[in-house]
Length: 195
Image 1 (spheres, rainbow, N blue to C red):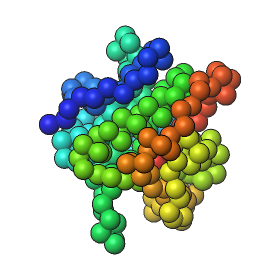
Image 2 (cartoon, rainbow, N blue to C red):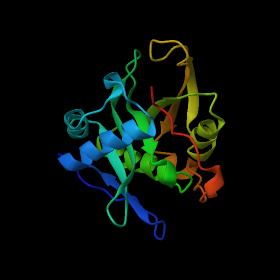
Image 3 (cartoon, rainbow, N blue to C red):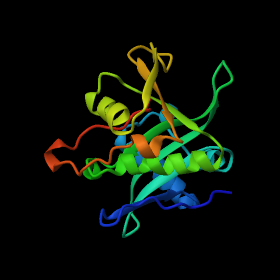
Image 4 (tube, helix red, strand yellow):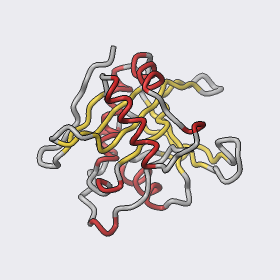
């Protein structure tokens, strides 16, 4: 059973916690589709999948305004590589475009970290498009993740090359650099992991 956790900085106007209600899982799936402009059913998330992930070693966390509106969402699952290394795999993070540049993505990653640590996972992996410099800066400089592989056509189709990163969750407190709010004109883009 998921245990709600709060990961909010005072004064930012939002807080992060685990999703627990069907309506929250549905809202997260809708936000994901809207942020990534997905209209094809093959890219859809659904509430049942997110609920199952959250109950079985995965994560489904949201960033909510003080009024209760969902402005960001991240989800992941327990993973294991061919060498037997276990980790939490963060599949995607999506932040409402109007809320980007406010540290929401970083807060979501920190909330995912808390969930992964509770499940006993000591590292987190995810991928991102290495051509998106803002994502590279966020993942490598701000969070302190380390590139471990470059994968061509990661999603088994052309033009989906990705850099795979690993984040030491035990050392994350030392490696995360808190991001200052970004000016409104610089807010753009999506966080990594998306197909």
